[in-house]
Length: 44
Image (cartoon, rainbow, N blue to C red; front, side, top):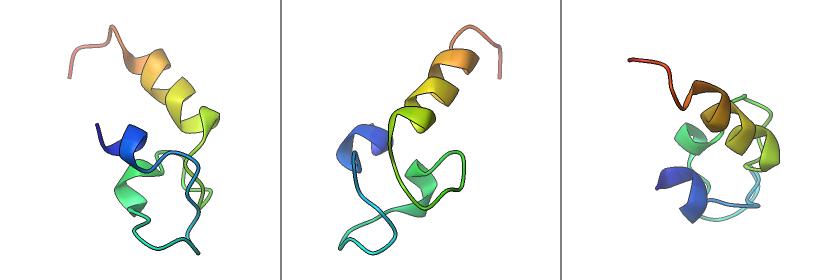
């Protein structure tokens, strides 16, 4: 999973993937995980 492989990275870290930053705050953290959780049961 893209978020897991970028966990705790920021825009300044090597290998940071902006696609993992779901809320656009330049950091992959619990806020991004919470976005996944909130969409878990929604149909795409």
